[in-house]
Length: 107
Image 1 (tube, rainbow, N blue to C red):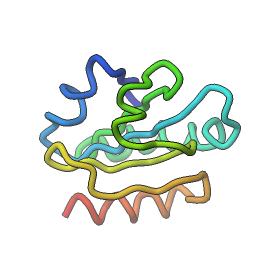
Image 2 (cartoon, rainbow, N blue to C red; image 1 turned 90 degrees about the vertical axis):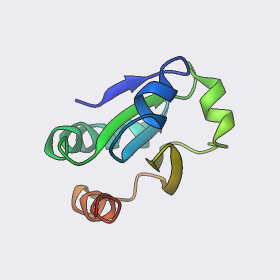
Image 3 (cartoon, helix red, strand yellow; image 1 turned 90 degrees about the horizontal axis):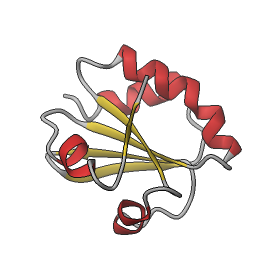
């Protein structure tokens, strides 16, 4: 299961992480976000050794959402060494595509 992060703990959980972090920017009212949720939760367990996967509810956490200019949901953003390095917008990726994408950031 993906860890839920907030404006308050984002720096600790994401920016200070010693491994790459996938942040799933999502919203309760977003059907594509709900469609992606099972794959995101599965990846959180499957890739736990190499990638940290977290979810951030954009409605409850406007500070981080605005800081990283997230305007569409879902937005998947990869952070390495405290910096955003890649992103995907929308729910068009399969589980296999997400794994391949994330593997490019763990090498």
